Structures are given as C-alpha cells and as structure tokens.
Length: 254
Image (cartoon, rainbow, N blue to C red; front, side):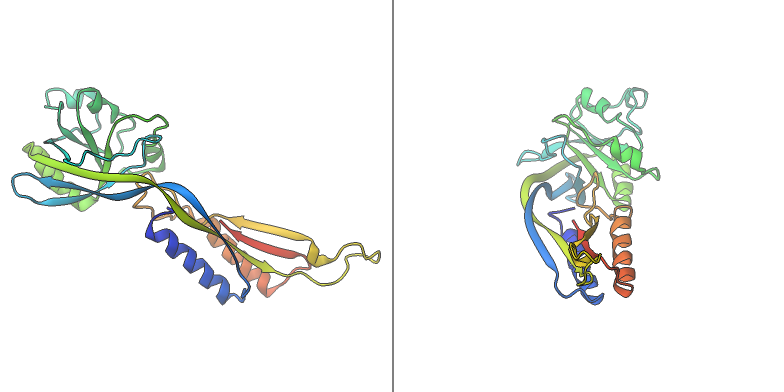
C-alpha cells in the first residue's frame, strides 16, 4: 500500500527488473496520494504490563481507528462471531471484544451493546469476501484492529478471565509519494506504407498494470493476488524485448 515500506520496495524492484531487461531510459512520474498510515497500535495487559502489537483496519470512510491519547481501558471479552446469542450474558458494555474474522458484519453488534473497540484475529477462515465486509463506506465511530495469529492465542487466554487491558492506536491520513514507471520499447524508424504518412515507431501501444496492493489491514498487505498483473507485464516486457514488434510499446507500471 502506498505510504508503507513495501510500496517503495516494490517500485525499486520493478525499476531494477526493467533495467535488467535492457530498458535503460526509464521515465518516472512522481505524484502524491492520500492514504491512511498506521502509526502504531498496542494492547497492554494492565496487571502484567505485557504488550501485544495490533494493526489498525482501513478507516470507516474518513474515520480512522485512532484512539484518545490516554487510550481505551476495559476488560477484553471473546465474542465469537459477534452474534447476539454469543454475546448474551457477557459484559460487553465498556469492553474490548475479540472476534473471529469470519463474523461477516456482526462486528456492529458489540458496538451497539456498548463495546469500545473490536479486535479481529485469523480463526482459519480469512477470505476476500470476509475482508470486503470489513470496509465501511460510512464514517462510523467503531475502532477496529487486527492481531496476528500467535498473539491471538494470548488474547484468547486473557479473554477467558476477562483481563483488564488498555489500548492505544493512531492512524492518520497522509499525503505520500507514489511513482508511475514507463519503459519504452522503440518501434521501427520506417514508414508503414509507401505513402510515407506514418512511421511504425509513432504508433504506440501501451501495456499497463498497477504494482501497489490493497488490504483491509493496510500495514499488512502481502499483495499476492494484486501482483499477478505486474508479473504478467514483466513477462510481456521480457518477451517483446527479445522479439521486438514494429510498433512502439510502452510498459506502464502505475
């Protein structure tokens, strides 16, 4: 995701790959994009002081999961898939609720019952559809976070005894740099027809793919599915560099 270290690494990798293929005259277009940048989130166990790293989810429209400077404190409670049946009888008001990721949009339920924040974990059913359910197009004040699988086991143990915890988090909207990369394979400097109206090299074909990624947890965006297009673009550049067409071809990585 732009604004995170992996984005810059992806760009530098692409630039080096095009150079390896023999594209020496690369065109770089720099511009700014506005993205939510995870400045860090943490859950601290009040009794022991143990700290567990969290990751902010993508903002609800413009509302980021940022918490007050003093943080949010309360018991941590496991809510399963967030159904009212599972939440029944649990001290939800004022608590931080741990939910299975495959809860659909049931994460609204703890908030309606007074929970202050929701933490998701990988219960073995992380899918693209479930991730899409976690994007909200309205600025709901519902702080939501992700915890990695190993740390989730610790939180589940804490939830069994409804341990008191304190959470801190900050996510800000930032203007960050991004780059378009253009590699050009020049066409033949000859006329297409005997009328000498157009040259092959002046006819330009553009092959394009994006190289950034998206994730409902922007600080954790492996980009495996997102990388298929740019992988195909690199393969096309390799093939056409070895077998140049008459036309000019521009390889545009955005």
